Image (cartoon, rainbow, N blue to C red):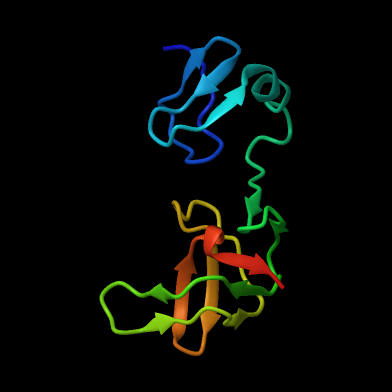
Length: 117
């Protein structure tokens, strides 16, 4: 099997080359082969999590929800505009990048539903 890089967006390893780009058939993400080859050094494993506006999030940041979020399996709704302090960005969390605590409990949320405060 060839040494194709995993998808930087969904981290699955089903990528294939297409012209000058790598393509992930699972999430549809495309990125240039030159950027993937240049990033194979020490930056591998460093994960960048961005909010809905494209700002880079870091552990300890405060964020604001941009959308009402219904919690699966319960009647809890996290309301738009809720400020969440001191987020964490755990490794290997799947597609939910942010670990946080609110008044309703602890949750794993996707970064696309929040903006940096």
